Amino acid sequence: MKNILKQLFSSHPSHQDDADHVSSFNEQQAKEEDVQFIDHGVQTIALEKITGSVGKYADFDSRFRPKKHVSGKRFIDIKQAMRQGKAMPPVKLYQIRNQYYVLDGNHRVAAAKELGWTEISAKVVELLSGNNTMENLLYIEKNKFFQKTGLPLEIDLTELGKYNYLEQQIRNHQVFLTSQSGRDCDFAKASRDWYNTIYLPMTAIIKNGDLITYFPGRTIADLYTYIAYHHWDTNANRRYGIGIDRLIPKSMEGFRTAMLEKQTPEYPEMKRTITAFVLIDTDTTAEVTLSDKLFALEEVQEVHAVHGSIDLLVKVVLKRDFLASDAETIAEFLDQHIRKIAGIKRTQTMIPGRSLVKDGFNY
Image (cartoon, rainbow, N blue to C red; front, side, top):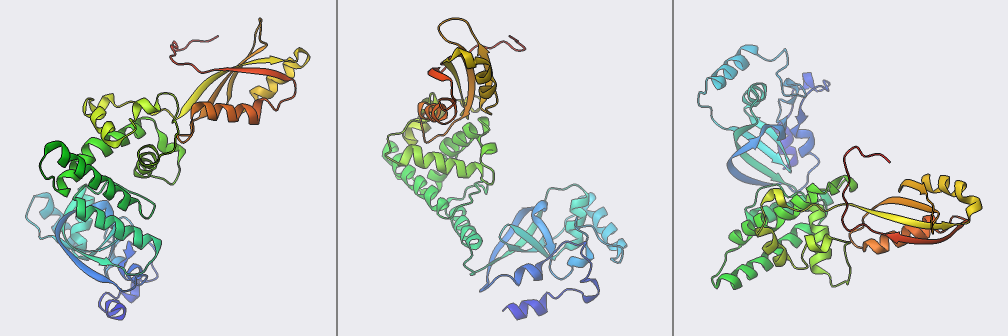
């Protein structure tokens, strides 16, 4: 099969040394093994996902514009017809995972991109590899999930097995909906309800809290599965910190009920940081040196020498660990970074429950 495809889709020898071109389907397909062909029929495809060509990849530059040696008149005529809204047949694409390669319609794709279109109608044939790499296995798992659920292709996970976890969540939700209504609920309907009333509200909370910036290489969907698993599925007696348990009830259906009462802009913010004030009693002879050492700590934002029963007032901002309580996070920081400093005699910690701060206020 591989040799047949190489002959059928061979590129032009005179252009093979030119690196400024769209991706070669032949080069990508050669990496796959035991290929299956799946006809998806006519679909609407985002132009940004069309990254290469079958055979003619050297005729177009890296932005899918025709090169000088390609007939300019044909391209201009096609672009003019498309601009005028004349009917065009769907282009033909091969799909390898999340990328598409043009089998027929290179000029139409190039014209659409130049006209500023974002999508195009296409007949799609997918090449599904049997090569058991982690990437392929994850892609197959993802495909099966979306085929079963019919959900929009917006749930992007990076770990194998997590789509199966989401599918089981939906099946549990299907049982719940059936018990609530007294009527059978099909899987597709349960999938839509889960997506709109559980997945989207939870990911809105995650986005509002800007959590994704603290997990490079991970996705919003990854964080959803992480929090959902630890908060709803494990029996560990953990607290996620002050306020977090109020944001996310301890059951998935409890969360759904709470979110149905809110409008999207009202979704609560899942704050990633903890603010605490540490009152410190010191050996007064070392107070200045201690202030400098404390202020040098990354987590310490303010250090104040004060009069009264304590010597120093320190404001710290810590990163929250959603698998530990705020008290545990603060205690670990105090033990590892503050109490080890020579000259500190005693500490007392205060965690603000409600704060009012004026904009532009300076001490």
